[in-house]
Image 1 (tube, rainbow, N blue to C red):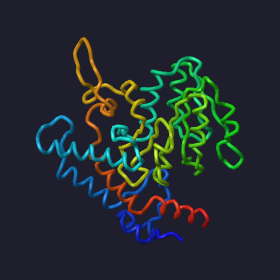
Image 2: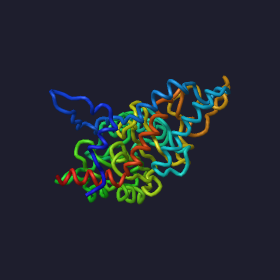
Image 3: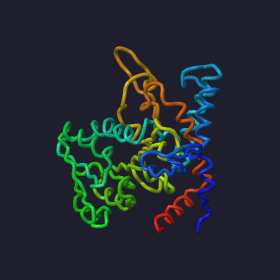
Image 4: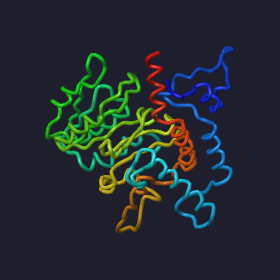
Amino acid sequence: MTQFNPIEVRKDFPIFSRSFNGKPLCYLDSTATTQKPQSVIDALTSYYSQSNANIHRGLYALAEESTNLYEGARARVARFINAARPEEIVFTRNATESINLVAHAWGRQNLKEGDEILISAMEHHANFVPWYQLSKEKNVVIKVAPLTADYNVDLAAFKKLLSPRTKLVAVTAMSNVLGTIVPVEEIIAMARTVGAKVLIDAAQSVPHFKTDVQAMGADWIAFSAHKMLGPTGIGVLWGRYDILDAMDPFMGGGEMISIVSVEKTTWAHVPQKFEAGTPNIADAVAFVPALDYLDKLGMDEIRAHEKELLAY
């Protein structure tokens, strides 16, 4: 048995004080979005009541404080997934936007007619529709690896679908529908044999077990704060720094530029290059106590508890 005590954990989440039809709330939709512990709610309130200012542009104390909180959140996310440096963390709205960012900023720049993208049959729409749109625009071929009878990715079929034309492999690490845990390290190793880049939709996996992006070996992973006790409206794209540095910007506007003139515009450094305009500062800051909470519970303990629930 694990040391995980769900009765005590429930007390940290104010929403569980509610009842429906005279019975305590039982919430079984964490795949869609998780509930928030009091520490996350308090952090959001504290930011708006004590620290609110725009970032990266003001020289006054409140702006510097807000900037430090925002960049501190970036560094905290980097530590949580063992990124090589904080600059590899790009804040987005959600995992969907993170995947779209790669499709637009890398896909349009690097894919050409006849190139192939390999996905699996269990992908969320967020990891299919952006590639479908790109395939229509660039005449790129999408190949779909089938599933086995027990709803795992058919690795033998996956391997056969790889070819020298495969430029991108984009797969989920855990299915939001099936709960299947995909052996992404094995898939990444196969993708490398043909020189393909790899994107992992980690929206479901990062909340459930330890994620080490350096050990995993992918080129990008995407996930969302709201599926791991954090606020809605803040997502993460992790990418290898050299790859992010070579990519085009996703959107144009303030903060993502270095020098602007009629004759020439140059881009800011990574990650600011991909964070045009005023970002979701408050929710990035409130993401930190969510990560602290998960670490306090222990990712290994969380995983062990889930195994007990599965056995039950």
